[in-house]
View 1 (tube, rainbow, N blue to C red):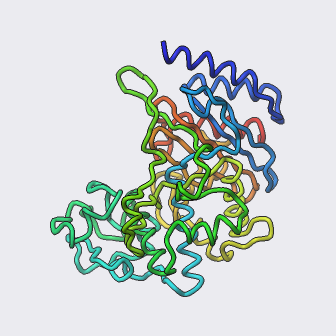
View 2 (cartoon, rainbow, N blue to C red):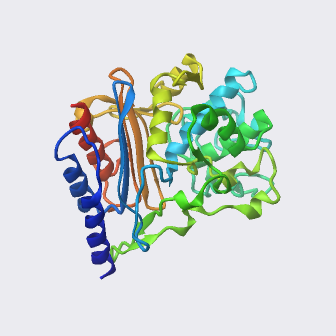
View 3 (spheres, one colour):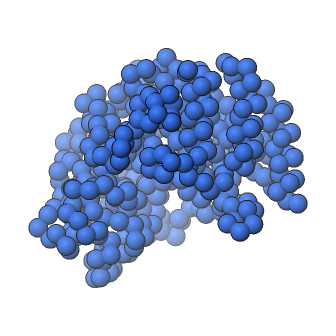
Length: 386
Protein backbone atom coordinates (compact mmCIF):
# COMPACT_ATOMS: atom_id res chain seq x y z
CA UNK A 1 0.00 0.00 0.00
CA UNK A 2 2.89 2.33 0.92
CA UNK A 3 4.63 1.78 -2.42
CA UNK A 4 1.39 2.31 -4.41
CA UNK A 5 0.81 5.61 -2.58
CA UNK A 6 4.38 6.66 -3.39
CA UNK A 7 3.84 6.12 -7.12
CA UNK A 8 0.58 8.07 -7.10
CA UNK A 9 2.36 11.02 -5.45
CA UNK A 10 5.33 10.72 -7.79
CA UNK A 11 3.07 10.81 -10.86
CA UNK A 12 1.39 13.99 -9.59
CA UNK A 13 4.78 15.62 -8.96
CA UNK A 14 6.09 14.67 -12.41
CA UNK A 15 2.98 16.02 -14.12
CA UNK A 16 3.28 19.23 -12.16
CA UNK A 17 6.88 20.02 -13.12
CA UNK A 18 7.45 22.87 -15.56
CA UNK A 19 10.68 22.32 -17.48
CA UNK A 20 12.24 23.65 -20.66
CA UNK A 21 13.60 20.59 -22.40
CA UNK A 22 14.89 21.15 -25.91
CA UNK A 23 13.03 18.16 -27.35
CA UNK A 24 9.25 17.59 -27.20
CA UNK A 25 8.24 14.64 -25.10
CA UNK A 26 11.43 14.66 -23.03
CA UNK A 27 9.63 15.02 -19.69
CA UNK A 28 7.36 12.12 -20.63
CA UNK A 29 10.41 9.96 -21.35
CA UNK A 30 11.93 10.95 -18.01
CA UNK A 31 8.73 9.92 -16.26
CA UNK A 32 8.71 6.58 -18.09
CA UNK A 33 12.33 5.92 -17.10
CA UNK A 34 11.60 6.75 -13.46
CA UNK A 35 8.57 4.47 -13.45
CA UNK A 36 10.45 1.64 -15.15
CA UNK A 37 13.26 1.71 -12.59
CA UNK A 38 11.14 2.90 -9.65
CA UNK A 39 13.25 5.99 -9.04
CA UNK A 40 12.01 8.23 -6.19
CA UNK A 41 13.97 11.34 -7.20
CA UNK A 42 16.11 12.26 -10.20
CA UNK A 43 18.37 15.25 -10.91
CA UNK A 44 19.84 15.95 -14.35
CA UNK A 45 22.23 18.38 -16.00
CA UNK A 46 23.35 18.52 -19.63
CA UNK A 47 26.39 20.22 -21.13
CA UNK A 48 26.38 20.95 -24.86
CA UNK A 49 28.86 23.06 -26.83
CA UNK A 50 30.86 23.50 -23.63
CA UNK A 51 28.07 25.05 -21.55
CA UNK A 52 25.21 23.93 -19.32
CA UNK A 53 22.07 23.93 -21.47
CA UNK A 54 19.68 22.08 -19.17
CA UNK A 55 19.33 21.32 -15.45
CA UNK A 56 16.22 20.01 -13.74
CA UNK A 57 14.94 17.78 -10.95
CA UNK A 58 12.05 15.32 -10.99
CA UNK A 59 10.19 13.33 -8.39
CA UNK A 60 10.48 13.50 -4.62
CA UNK A 61 13.20 14.67 -2.28
CA UNK A 62 11.60 12.71 0.54
CA UNK A 63 8.89 10.08 0.10
CA UNK A 64 7.45 10.17 3.62
CA UNK A 65 6.97 13.94 3.64
CA UNK A 66 6.07 14.14 -0.08
CA UNK A 67 8.60 16.94 -0.66
CA UNK A 68 9.29 17.69 -4.35
CA UNK A 69 12.94 17.51 -5.39
CA UNK A 70 14.53 20.84 -6.36
CA UNK A 71 17.47 21.13 -8.75
CA UNK A 72 19.68 22.80 -6.11
CA UNK A 73 19.13 20.01 -3.56
CA UNK A 74 22.20 18.06 -2.45
CA UNK A 75 22.99 14.40 -3.04
CA UNK A 76 25.79 12.40 -1.50
CA UNK A 77 27.28 11.42 -4.87
CA UNK A 78 29.30 8.33 -3.78
CA UNK A 79 32.37 7.45 -5.87
CA UNK A 80 32.31 10.52 -8.10
CA UNK A 81 33.73 12.05 -4.91
CA UNK A 82 37.05 10.41 -5.75
CA UNK A 83 37.61 12.93 -8.54
CA UNK A 84 37.88 15.70 -5.93
CA UNK A 85 40.60 13.71 -4.14
CA UNK A 86 42.61 13.14 -7.32
CA UNK A 87 42.27 16.83 -8.19
CA UNK A 88 43.62 17.77 -4.74
CA UNK A 89 46.55 15.36 -5.06
CA UNK A 90 47.55 16.75 -8.45
CA UNK A 91 47.36 20.29 -7.06
CA UNK A 92 49.81 19.26 -4.34
CA UNK A 93 52.05 17.61 -6.92
CA UNK A 94 52.06 20.90 -8.84
CA UNK A 95 53.18 22.61 -5.61
CA UNK A 96 56.02 20.06 -5.20
CA UNK A 97 54.53 18.90 -1.91
CA UNK A 98 54.03 15.38 -3.30
CA UNK A 99 55.34 13.15 -6.06
CA UNK A 100 53.24 10.46 -7.69
CA UNK A 101 55.96 7.87 -7.17
CA UNK A 102 56.28 8.60 -3.44
CA UNK A 103 55.87 5.47 -1.33
CA UNK A 104 52.58 5.32 0.56
CA UNK A 105 54.29 4.04 3.71
CA UNK A 106 56.29 7.27 3.91
CA UNK A 107 53.27 9.43 3.12
CA UNK A 108 50.70 7.89 5.47
CA UNK A 109 52.91 7.21 8.49
CA UNK A 110 52.36 3.45 8.85
CA UNK A 111 53.49 0.47 6.80
CA UNK A 112 51.53 -0.15 3.61
CA UNK A 113 53.24 -3.10 1.94
CA UNK A 114 51.90 -6.18 0.18
CA UNK A 115 53.18 -9.16 2.23
CA UNK A 116 53.17 -11.35 -0.89
CA UNK A 117 55.55 -8.93 -2.65
CA UNK A 118 57.53 -7.28 0.18
CA UNK A 119 60.18 -5.84 -2.15
CA UNK A 120 57.66 -3.92 -4.27
CA UNK A 121 56.76 -0.41 -3.15
CA UNK A 122 53.15 0.76 -3.19
CA UNK A 123 53.09 4.31 -4.53
CA UNK A 124 50.68 7.23 -4.58
CA UNK A 125 50.25 6.70 -8.32
CA UNK A 126 49.01 3.17 -7.62
CA UNK A 127 46.40 4.40 -5.13
CA UNK A 128 45.08 6.89 -7.67
CA UNK A 129 44.75 4.30 -10.45
CA UNK A 130 43.51 1.40 -8.25
CA UNK A 131 46.61 -0.66 -9.08
CA UNK A 132 47.94 -0.75 -5.50
CA UNK A 133 46.89 -4.41 -4.91
CA UNK A 134 44.89 -3.23 -1.87
CA UNK A 135 41.32 -4.49 -1.48
CA UNK A 136 38.29 -3.67 0.65
CA UNK A 137 37.88 -7.07 2.31
CA UNK A 138 38.92 -5.63 5.67
CA UNK A 139 36.67 -2.61 5.32
CA UNK A 140 37.51 0.96 4.41
CA UNK A 141 35.57 3.22 6.79
CA UNK A 142 38.68 3.43 8.99
CA UNK A 143 42.23 2.05 9.02
CA UNK A 144 41.66 -0.63 11.67
CA UNK A 145 42.33 -3.50 9.27
CA UNK A 146 45.38 -2.14 7.47
CA UNK A 147 47.24 -0.19 10.17
CA UNK A 148 49.80 -2.60 11.71
CA UNK A 149 49.49 -0.84 15.07
CA UNK A 150 45.83 -1.90 15.17
CA UNK A 151 45.96 -5.21 13.30
CA UNK A 152 49.09 -7.32 12.99
CA UNK A 153 47.22 -9.74 10.72
CA UNK A 154 46.45 -7.28 7.96
CA UNK A 155 47.31 -9.67 5.12
CA UNK A 156 43.70 -9.86 3.93
CA UNK A 157 43.85 -6.19 2.91
CA UNK A 158 46.20 -7.15 0.06
CA UNK A 159 45.54 -9.16 -3.09
CA UNK A 160 48.01 -11.81 -4.22
CA UNK A 161 49.47 -10.02 -7.23
CA UNK A 162 52.30 -7.56 -7.65
CA UNK A 163 51.44 -3.92 -6.95
CA UNK A 164 51.22 -1.85 -10.11
CA UNK A 165 50.35 -4.75 -12.40
CA UNK A 166 46.57 -5.11 -12.14
CA UNK A 167 43.44 -2.98 -11.66
CA UNK A 168 41.20 -3.68 -8.67
CA UNK A 169 38.68 -1.05 -7.63
CA UNK A 170 39.24 -0.30 -3.96
CA UNK A 171 37.64 2.40 -1.79
CA UNK A 172 40.42 2.11 0.78
CA UNK A 173 42.81 3.59 -1.79
CA UNK A 174 40.98 6.90 -1.70
CA UNK A 175 40.36 7.04 2.03
CA UNK A 176 44.14 6.72 2.41
CA UNK A 177 44.51 9.51 -0.16
CA UNK A 178 42.38 11.76 2.06
CA UNK A 179 44.90 11.46 4.89
CA UNK A 180 47.82 11.93 2.50
CA UNK A 181 46.25 15.23 1.37
CA UNK A 182 46.27 16.32 5.02
CA UNK A 183 49.87 15.21 5.58
CA UNK A 184 51.08 17.13 2.54
CA UNK A 185 48.99 20.29 3.00
CA UNK A 186 48.72 20.60 6.78
CA UNK A 187 45.02 21.30 6.30
CA UNK A 188 42.07 19.11 7.34
CA UNK A 189 40.78 17.17 4.33
CA UNK A 190 37.31 18.71 4.04
CA UNK A 191 38.74 22.22 4.47
CA UNK A 192 41.40 21.64 1.83
CA UNK A 193 38.81 20.58 -0.75
CA UNK A 194 36.49 23.45 0.19
CA UNK A 195 39.24 26.09 0.00
CA UNK A 196 41.08 24.87 -3.08
CA UNK A 197 38.34 23.36 -5.28
CA UNK A 198 34.82 24.22 -4.12
CA UNK A 199 35.21 27.94 -3.38
CA UNK A 200 37.28 28.76 -6.50
CA UNK A 201 34.64 27.07 -8.66
CA UNK A 202 31.87 29.07 -6.99
CA UNK A 203 29.78 26.02 -6.15
CA UNK A 204 27.88 24.90 -3.04
CA UNK A 205 29.17 21.52 -1.89
CA UNK A 206 31.23 19.78 0.74
CA UNK A 207 32.31 16.65 2.57
CA UNK A 208 31.43 18.03 6.02
CA UNK A 209 27.70 17.83 6.75
CA UNK A 210 28.06 20.52 9.43
CA UNK A 211 29.21 23.01 6.79
CA UNK A 212 26.06 22.56 4.69
CA UNK A 213 22.34 23.29 4.89
CA UNK A 214 21.01 19.89 5.93
CA UNK A 215 17.50 20.77 4.76
CA UNK A 216 18.82 20.47 1.21
CA UNK A 217 19.92 16.84 1.63
CA UNK A 218 18.04 14.42 -0.65
CA UNK A 219 16.83 11.26 1.09
CA UNK A 220 18.39 8.11 -0.39
CA UNK A 221 16.53 4.80 -0.56
CA UNK A 222 17.55 1.17 -0.62
CA UNK A 223 15.20 -1.57 -1.70
CA UNK A 224 14.49 -4.80 0.19
CA UNK A 225 15.44 -7.81 -1.94
CA UNK A 226 12.41 -9.88 -0.98
CA UNK A 227 9.60 -7.32 -0.81
CA UNK A 228 10.99 -4.49 -2.94
CA UNK A 229 9.99 -2.01 -0.23
CA UNK A 230 11.90 1.27 -0.19
CA UNK A 231 13.74 2.16 3.03
CA UNK A 232 15.46 5.46 3.68
CA UNK A 233 19.22 5.16 4.19
CA UNK A 234 19.68 7.05 7.44
CA UNK A 235 23.47 6.62 7.37
CA UNK A 236 23.94 8.60 4.15
CA UNK A 237 24.41 11.96 5.87
CA UNK A 238 25.54 10.93 9.36
CA UNK A 239 28.27 13.16 10.82
CA UNK A 240 31.15 11.36 12.56
CA UNK A 241 31.37 13.90 15.38
CA UNK A 242 32.79 11.37 17.87
CA UNK A 243 35.86 11.03 15.65
CA UNK A 244 36.02 14.75 14.89
CA UNK A 245 36.26 15.47 18.64
CA UNK A 246 39.60 13.62 18.76
CA UNK A 247 40.69 14.25 15.19
CA UNK A 248 44.26 13.36 14.19
CA UNK A 249 45.38 15.50 11.27
CA UNK A 250 46.99 13.26 8.67
CA UNK A 251 45.13 10.18 9.90
CA UNK A 252 41.41 10.71 10.60
CA UNK A 253 40.41 11.94 7.13
CA UNK A 254 38.53 8.67 6.54
CA UNK A 255 35.79 10.06 8.84
CA UNK A 256 34.77 12.41 6.00
CA UNK A 257 34.69 9.51 3.50
CA UNK A 258 37.01 10.97 0.84
CA UNK A 259 36.11 7.95 -1.29
CA UNK A 260 32.38 8.76 -1.44
CA UNK A 261 31.20 11.52 0.89
CA UNK A 262 30.89 14.63 -1.30
CA UNK A 263 27.49 16.35 -1.17
CA UNK A 264 26.56 18.46 -4.19
CA UNK A 265 23.70 19.32 -6.56
CA UNK A 266 23.49 18.19 -10.18
CA UNK A 267 24.03 21.69 -11.70
CA UNK A 268 27.10 22.31 -9.52
CA UNK A 269 28.49 18.88 -10.37
CA UNK A 270 28.06 19.88 -14.02
CA UNK A 271 30.33 22.88 -13.33
CA UNK A 272 32.95 20.53 -11.88
CA UNK A 273 32.55 18.40 -15.00
CA UNK A 274 33.12 21.48 -17.16
CA UNK A 275 36.37 22.11 -15.30
CA UNK A 276 37.56 18.61 -16.23
CA UNK A 277 36.19 18.97 -19.75
CA UNK A 278 38.28 22.12 -20.18
CA UNK A 279 41.42 20.50 -18.76
CA UNK A 280 41.47 22.10 -15.34
CA UNK A 281 39.73 25.42 -15.97
CA UNK A 282 36.16 26.69 -15.50
CA UNK A 283 34.77 30.18 -16.01
CA UNK A 284 38.22 31.74 -16.11
CA UNK A 285 39.41 29.99 -12.94
CA UNK A 286 42.20 27.41 -13.23
CA UNK A 287 41.99 24.56 -10.72
CA UNK A 288 44.61 22.32 -12.36
CA UNK A 289 47.34 22.91 -14.87
CA UNK A 290 46.53 21.48 -18.30
CA UNK A 291 49.22 18.79 -17.98
CA UNK A 292 47.82 17.64 -14.62
CA UNK A 293 44.28 17.48 -15.99
CA UNK A 294 45.50 15.46 -18.98
CA UNK A 295 47.32 13.11 -16.63
CA UNK A 296 44.16 12.63 -14.57
CA UNK A 297 42.19 11.64 -17.68
CA UNK A 298 44.93 9.51 -19.24
CA UNK A 299 44.07 5.75 -19.46
CA UNK A 300 46.71 4.47 -17.06
CA UNK A 301 45.37 0.92 -16.85
CA UNK A 302 43.00 -1.14 -18.99
CA UNK A 303 39.96 -2.47 -17.18
CA UNK A 304 38.20 -4.35 -19.96
CA UNK A 305 37.31 -4.17 -23.62
CA UNK A 306 36.94 -0.51 -24.54
CA UNK A 307 37.44 0.69 -20.97
CA UNK A 308 40.30 2.04 -18.88
CA UNK A 309 40.98 4.00 -15.70
CA UNK A 310 42.90 7.20 -15.08
CA UNK A 311 43.08 8.95 -11.72
CA UNK A 312 39.50 8.81 -10.36
CA UNK A 313 38.34 8.94 -13.96
CA UNK A 314 36.90 6.16 -16.09
CA UNK A 315 37.51 6.19 -19.84
CA UNK A 316 35.17 4.05 -21.93
CA UNK A 317 33.71 3.67 -25.38
CA UNK A 318 30.82 1.33 -25.94
CA UNK A 319 28.41 1.08 -28.90
CA UNK A 320 25.52 0.81 -26.43
CA UNK A 321 26.25 4.18 -24.82
CA UNK A 322 25.84 7.70 -26.24
CA UNK A 323 26.00 6.60 -29.85
CA UNK A 324 29.33 4.91 -29.31
CA UNK A 325 31.07 8.17 -28.41
CA UNK A 326 34.00 8.25 -25.99
CA UNK A 327 32.88 8.92 -22.42
CA UNK A 328 35.16 10.20 -19.67
CA UNK A 329 34.04 10.53 -16.06
CA UNK A 330 32.83 8.35 -13.20
CA UNK A 331 29.88 6.57 -11.64
CA UNK A 332 28.75 6.33 -8.02
CA UNK A 333 26.73 3.85 -5.99
CA UNK A 334 26.03 3.88 -2.23
CA UNK A 335 23.10 3.86 0.20
CA UNK A 336 20.69 3.32 -2.70
CA UNK A 337 21.97 6.30 -4.70
CA UNK A 338 23.20 5.90 -8.28
CA UNK A 339 25.10 8.69 -9.99
CA UNK A 340 27.15 9.40 -13.07
CA UNK A 341 29.17 12.24 -14.53
CA UNK A 342 30.43 11.65 -18.09
CA UNK A 343 31.66 13.93 -20.85
CA UNK A 344 33.17 13.79 -24.31
CA UNK A 345 36.35 15.91 -24.35
CA UNK A 346 36.38 16.56 -28.12
CA UNK A 347 32.72 17.20 -28.86
CA UNK A 348 32.28 19.18 -25.63
CA UNK A 349 29.12 17.53 -24.34
CA UNK A 350 28.45 15.86 -21.03
CA UNK A 351 25.84 14.55 -18.61
CA UNK A 352 25.14 14.49 -14.89
CA UNK A 353 22.50 11.97 -13.83
CA UNK A 354 21.72 11.32 -10.14
CA UNK A 355 18.89 9.20 -8.74
CA UNK A 356 18.02 8.57 -5.11
CA UNK A 357 17.23 4.86 -5.59
CA UNK A 358 16.27 2.32 -8.24
CA UNK A 359 15.78 -1.33 -9.07
CA UNK A 360 18.90 -3.43 -8.53
CA UNK A 361 19.67 -4.58 -12.04
CA UNK A 362 22.96 -4.41 -13.94
CA UNK A 363 23.53 -3.71 -17.61
CA UNK A 364 25.99 -5.65 -19.76
CA UNK A 365 28.38 -2.71 -19.83
CA UNK A 366 31.82 -1.78 -18.44
CA UNK A 367 32.15 -1.66 -14.63
CA UNK A 368 28.77 -3.41 -14.29
CA UNK A 369 27.00 -0.12 -14.96
CA UNK A 370 23.42 -0.17 -13.72
CA UNK A 371 20.77 -0.19 -16.42
CA UNK A 372 19.16 3.00 -15.15
CA UNK A 373 22.47 4.85 -15.62
CA UNK A 374 22.99 3.42 -19.10
CA UNK A 375 19.43 4.32 -20.12
CA UNK A 376 19.88 7.72 -18.52
CA UNK A 377 22.95 8.51 -20.61
CA UNK A 378 21.18 7.44 -23.77
CA UNK A 379 18.03 9.40 -22.93
CA UNK A 380 20.03 12.60 -22.48
CA UNK A 381 22.21 11.96 -25.50
CA UNK A 382 19.25 11.26 -27.79
CA UNK A 383 17.30 14.33 -26.65
CA UNK A 384 20.05 16.94 -26.36
CA UNK A 385 23.10 15.85 -28.36
CA UNK A 386 22.12 13.44 -31.13
